Each structure stands twice: as C-alpha cells, then as structure tokens.
Amino acid sequence: MTATIKFSYRLRQLFLLLTDLLSYYIGFIVALGIRSLTTPSLDTILSHLSPFSIIFLLWIIINYVNGLYDLRLMTLVGNIRKIIESALIALTVGVIFFYLVPSPSIMPKTILVLAVGIGFGISGLFRSLYLSYIGTHKLKTRILFLGVTDEIKELISTISHHPNLGYTVSAVIDPERVFTKSPDTDIELYHTLNTLRPAIDTQQIHTVVVAPTMNEEDAVKRELYELLFWRVQIVDMTSFYELVTGRIPPSTFSESWFLNNLQTAEHPVYHKAKRGIDIVFGIILCLILCILFPAIALAIKLSSPGRIIFKQKRIGEGGQIFWMYKFRTMYTLAEDGSAETHGAEFSKKGDVRITPVGSFLRKMRLDELPQAFNLLKGEITLVGPRPERPEIVEQLTTQMPYYPLRHIIKPGITGWAAVHQHYTDTLESSLKKLQYDLY
Image (tube, rainbow, N blue to C red; front, side):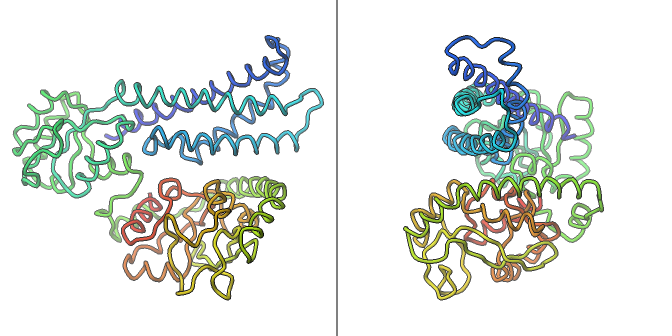
C-alpha cells in the first residue's frame, strides 16, 4: 500500500536530480561560450562532452551523499549551505579528475571553474522554485490519520514544519480522545469511527495512515475493508513514519522486529564491488589529503599547540576496536593529547574546546580526510553508521540495550544519521541517531 506514496516521493527526487543534470549541462555550455567569447560550435561541445559527463555523474553522487536529494532536509537556507559545500567538493573532484586523466585537446581550468559556479547556481534557482511552488503546492498528498500515538503526534508536527515533503494533514480521527482540540487550525478532528468515510469524501483525502493501536479492532477492519473500493490509499503508521522521517519508530523496537528486518545475508559480488568503490574513493581522498595537508597542518599548528593528526579508539563491525584518524580540531587539554579532562564526553554544538581552525575544518568536513587510511585498511566503509567510542557505547548501552545493533555492519565515513544530525549530546538525540542508523 505504500508503493504509490514511495513513487510520489521518488518522483520528486528524480525531478531534483534531472534539474541538477540540466543545470550542469547548461553551465558547461555557457562556460564554453565565456571561455571562447563566442557561441561554442557543436564540435567544441562534443570534444568536451565525455569527460564533463563523467564529472557531472560524480557531482550527482556528491549531492546524494550531502543529502541534497533528501526532501526531509530541504529548506531554503539549508539548501544554499549544502549547494555551496557540494560545489566546493565538486570543484576539487574535477581538478583531481583532470589531473589523473589529462587530455591534450581540453583546457579545463577556466571551463571547470565556470561550470561549477554557473551549474550549481542554476541548480540553486531550480531548487528555490521547487521549494516555493512545485513541492509545496502542486504535489501535495492529503493525509488522514486514523488513531493517535506519540509517533503520529510527531508526524503531524514534522509535516506541519516541512511543507517541502509534499504532504498536508487534513484530518485526524481520534476515537480514544487523546486530543481535546485539533492540533492545528487546518486539521479537522473527529472522535468517532463512523466519520471515516465522510471525512475522506469531505476532505478529499488521498491517504489514510492507520495507527498500530487501531489494527486490532474488528470495527476498524470492517471500515478499512470498505475503503478497498475507494480511490484512497491505506498505509500503516510504521511504513509512513519511516518514509517521512527516515527513521525507525521506537515503538517497533523488539527482538522479533530486529530478527525479521536486520538479518545480514551473504552477497559476495555486492561486497566485492563495495570494497572496490571504497578503495577508489580512498585513493581519491588520499590525493586530496596530500594536496591540502601542508595548508591544513600549518593552520592547525599556528592556531594551537598539539598534534596535527589525532587518533582515537572507535568500535567497528562486530564490536572490534580500531584506531580512527582525524585532523585535530580541539585544544589539547589532557596529557594524551585529547580535549577531555574528565573522561569521554560528547562534543556539543558551540563547544568551547573547538579551535577556530577546527571549527572551519568541521564545517567543511576536512577534519575527516585522514580517515582515508581507515578506508583503505578496510576498517570503515564510505557509507555506514559513524563509529562511536567504546566508553560512550558502554554508557549508551546501559540506557538503550539495542544500541550495539549498529555494529552488525561496518561503520562509515558518512551515514544516514550523520546527514540528518550534527551533534548527539543527549540520550534523546542518541536514540534518534539509533533510529536513523537502523533505518
């Protein structure tokens, strides 16, 4: 029943991806024109097309990893920041590509810089159009919630604050009277089950989301059966929650759920291909590290005394401990070179232990570059749950017994939780991080 909703979501993502590709090709052609100060000929365009097409595909991958195709993260300010980040990384990747694969017939320097600036600029305009008109008005799906739980309350709030998701909550049927009044002026609140079909008709509902608590009642089953003959979708709350938030709802946490959903199977071809991709990206990151190391090392040394590269114990796949490498971003406050004087502690937003240079490195994610060595050694992969410290894992496991499930797969340089969350410094944010990782 979630197939149509997922298709609608994927359609919006495909629209953004195609507009990005169109933007890059427009930027590429305009860059050729500016470079030669004339309208580029077809032969000139075709002679440059193949290498730049490869680069554009790499840019799409960069956008994906940076969360630019995740509708949950789309805001005007957030998009501008992510587009700038992706553009800088795209420029670096382009420079390395033409360095490794030189072509005597192509002079890419000026063209590449112009293509990045113009291409990502046009992409930003398309996204602004999507946010202000298409995604929030033309592609709306009208939702009715049947039953009320904590997760449904969260969904109502999330959809209300993120109109770019393409959903609008039009009605709630609350037989248990959890709500004493409507959670929003635009939401119609009903308290009896026999209002379901009239509400669907009156509110022009596209999708009915059913709370788990309602599925056990015979009266509800009879009403839902009648809806099979209506042009309306019926979706269970768990599936809809995952689609909207990108997380597993905590109400589903149980041994049986984990056994049914988290069993790992052997896929030799997939694992070999994934390892090959890790090695390729590890080599690329090492090259970027070699290019940027002198400037970053000098900046770190001038900003504060201490090591340039900092290593720390982390827990990997199967609970194995390994050393993870990063550029130092904090002041050296302890004898071991760390910034911790009272044992392991979370890094917080606005942490005073972070140096000014370290703040810049973190914002640009340059502090992660030394993890290229971990990637090549096979201790981490490109995409996976971020590895956590043994002391913090032990602390969180006492409060969240299912936390070690993060370790059934290899940790990564970036992951689903890392894209959606920046800092996890409380039990609540750590639970949310676990929900993302399990998803």
